Image (cartoon, rainbow, N blue to C red):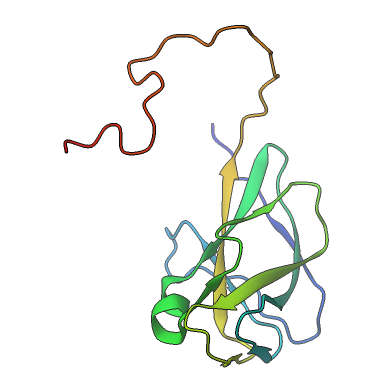
Length: 147
């Protein structure tokens, strides 16, 4: 039987919102801005969520950009995808940057990112002289294109 992991959540700010799923089967939990923040052009702004979590052992938390933030507000995560390790217990803060170079405002309570929890492998490293052969071999980016 496959037991569903538990994500322990602790509030770090008084008016923070609990992460939510819009639909029960959504992969990501929506994270909300815990305070109103000004996003400055050409800078990364850390937006506090007011929550800290305990990612289950053997898992990783990935901070993923919300498409609506990019489309409606022209902002995205500054680091592409954020990684939350299972032993981190601090407040989740989302690094936001404007895509259009304009100043912007994120209101408290705005959904700013998604938290996706995934199982991870922790392989042992083995330094070798040669790697096993593969069909792709040394082919790089675009090597499988039909062009």
